[in-house]
Image (tube, rainbow, N blue to C red; front, side, top):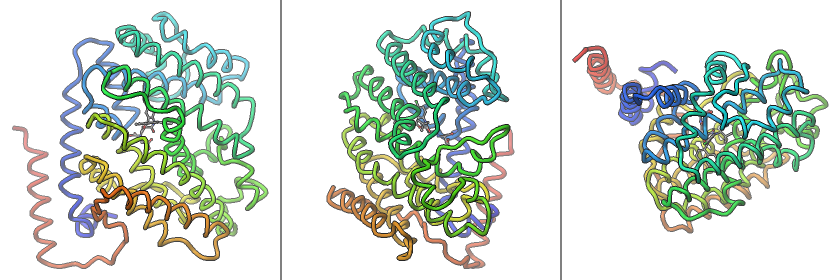
Length: 410
Ligand code: IN0
């Protein structure tokens, strides 16, 4: 959708979008003076988009710890992802990565683009890591050690069963949840959350990524990467790549809906985890990615486009989530609305229709019984554009003001 059409259809997204652009421009200017911190924050901005903005609102101590945790995990991920490294070299690196982060002289070149830069200058991340308080260092080391060992295990093994799927997602994302809970606790701003709820926070995000990234992972060069569990896709196809072809669309969508239904099982744990948070900045840091995840699941559900190209939430909607998530009422409101969207798309002939309905209705009940439901009106149901001349003039006027503000050098 073009910018003008998007604004006509969703005028309520214009203000948050402009605010997001300005915030992104502001953080570009807020790079710290010391080289290792400047590098770490610049890298963070390059490898994650909205996440860098969400980290920025945390207090400085926790912000530094999470920034380094994020980069260490991205570096570990770069080693795992690089299909050109032979297994016998990769496995020992993954298993010993937690020790290398203490060593400013350790170096291993791999990855491409920004990730190559991160790997080539990892000594700067180590320097920053060594400046963190011991309690933060220990939490980061412990999680990196467990994640590296888990990744090494899955280099040698495919995701076959649903249990494997949960185990793999635990290593690469559930452990991030456990680590973050430890960092929040070390900051003395939060109580220590249970491992089980922390794990669910990561699983909900990672399963959403795995579902959304089907095409990107299957087309990976030189070799496709497969995270969809065979136990699920084998009910619908003989080969995972069959879903790419138009003649298999019906089965592909049924498989997709099966996976979305599986991911939804973690939503209630996530709501429970978030409802226990006390610090506003930590709450927003956790809630924004979770709302994006349920939004992405709602967009993916019953959507054949997953097998054709990139499916993403509207930028304006992302901006609204970032600026309009302030408390649990907003989270319940978003979970309720995105669950309603899924519900509206359930086709009675889908093999998992009743299980999907059972899960979305359970989420909706949790939101309602909280007594805090705040229905925002995310305008999720696409309507036909109504070109109203007054509206067009207002939008054009706003766009010219916006354009002038962004281009004039004050
Ligand atoms: C994350 C998570 C994350 C944030 C907040 C609380 C969490 C609790 C448990 C587990 C993970 C939590 O969030 C990021 C979000 C992100 O990076 N988004 C991308 C967008 C995208 O499409 O990739 C962005 O550019 O903004 C996340 O996805 N992961 C992550 C990694 C490290 C940390 Cl410290 C926190 C990755 C993953 C695999 C889902 C855990």
